[in-house]
Image (cartoon, rainbow, N blue to C red; front, side, top):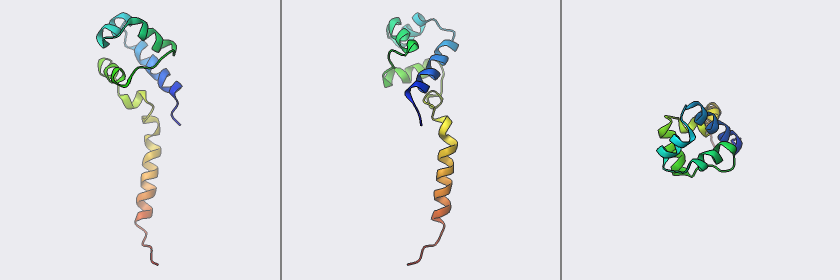
Length: 92
């Protein structure tokens, strides 16, 4: 299950690894430096548009930050199971 805490951790790691200061990142996103600080401390999460811009500025894959890549193989196996069962001929 995807949890907000996992997303926050990945987002925080990405921000720290970017090498940008909080001030520079905030300027590029058009938000206050305090807001970046709140993201890093887990006090708040970005709005969807800010999150999209954060991914663009830091050249991040949103699926990775949202932990969706962690579940990609599970959804493939579910789809494959469904596809296999749909090939069975059912007769009444």
